[in-house]
Length: 212
Image (cartoon, rainbow, N blue to C red; front, side, top):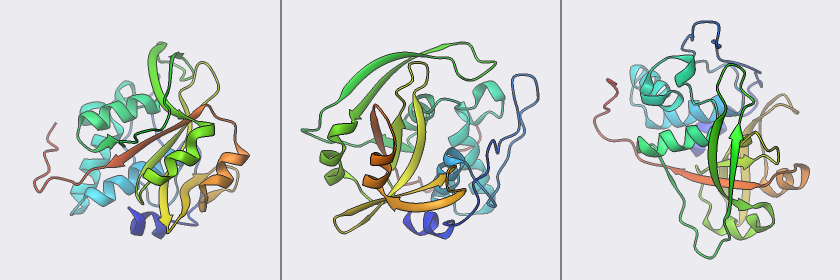
């Protein structure tokens, strides 16, 4: 995750990189030329698990869609759904973090046009407690930033990279226009958020069951 995410530093930010909507057919897209914050995570995670080109596209499909089925309504539009489905598939897992406070909230997500409103339960580390969370972070962890908007779960995501005691994040930045690395503390200071969710990628099995 560290090596691969570094390789794409400087690649352009691409808004709305996926093809499909409630009214148009979903087209599976796998591009290494540009990313938004979610497709950057998905691409690095799929590359890290893959042993061949076909393996990469198979993992990307499985990461992006519920049960790997390429349909717009099965795309993991909301990141709480993305996290839940990828935990279920064994691709990621929550990070154990004793003694760090957890904020629980319920929301009804309705910002994706064409999707029915979806109830969601969130558990996150509140923003003031994130410095206490940093001790548990490892390079390659995925971090999700919980929105303060009542009908949205997550507004941004990135990949954690440690350099000794310093914690950085690599992410596709809309404001800077490309994939960047910056200190996590800098991003926290510059953005309003309710808190963060931290998950850890799991090692891929020797034989990849991607048929479904």
